[in-house]
Length: 411
Ligand code: ADP
Image (tube, rainbow, N blue to C red):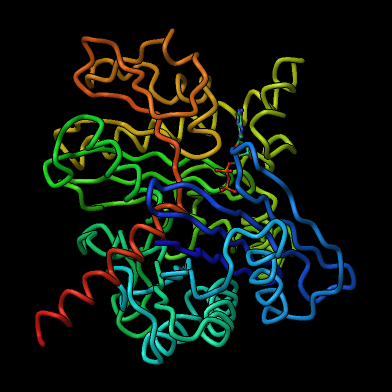
């Protein structure tokens, strides 16, 4: 079966077509600058094969509808196309950022589901409307093909109240749904499943700490395969130090800055999201640039690295306490998969907790999952490349197959 995965943003649409037999990518594309004069669609066809090619067009792309029509045309292109018609697509999976408390799992999209995603717009005012644009257009353009919403928040819906309720007036939760939701759920769930399989254990018997370090960073405590705590909060700002996002800060800083620096709340919010984190400390947000600068003696670059890895270590310690028994730590995403220095600093000195990194293994480059612990380490340490598109595709197919099974069973 072929699965089309759509990640629709405010001015872009990422799409990927996967052949699920053998789980390989047929095409991977991006529609960008939707609504601007010079929009662009680019698509890598048959990546990694001898027939790999690229299709690229620069033209005005008026709206999401137009962008999606172009994506469909590229996939069916007469010369380079990977399908003859749209009908060859078996399922469409949509990434949706915020499912609030309404969605605990991937869900087949119908009008009720669209309305529920709409109700969650206040929780993700930038992301959910853009995700909904993609859903609406895809439902129009691909009638009759099952479409599934896969939520970034769903995996974390198992987090118990003691970990998701903030110590604020309780009525803020009751009236405005203020609580921890967590994000990156598709990635945490995917690497947790892969890790359990690699360790030869059942996921339902595995406790691990999943450490997603990319531009956005988050950690998740996974107990018997279920998320029981995570570092991102009501919004993707809390927790670890990220590329441009602050992670944890004293909430009273807002008022202090308003009084002393004359900043208003909108400016403070923008600063915390776009000008903080690694960038806030040293002016750079790409970890590769930070290593270069630190190597040349830039003290703030070294400090940014120290602050981020110290925070990582603090959260690992906290989640060790939450879980009690931990079978594995899993590093994933751009930094987690590629940066031996960040990995080493994040676990340095945790030998007393049974975490022992094999320094030599850690220095290798990985395209595939790999273990990094010493033979004596009580806790295993893994690098597992995340693959959110594949995860969305697997989940979409599984939910469609479950629905078919139930329908057949009822008849
Ligand atoms: P996103 O959160 O946008 O999905 P990624 O998971 O792709 O991000 O991670 C992007 C980040 O990964 C980059 O900003 C960079 O800091 C880091 N990164 C990528 N490659 C390397 C590398 N070889 N060494 C260190 N960091 C890397």
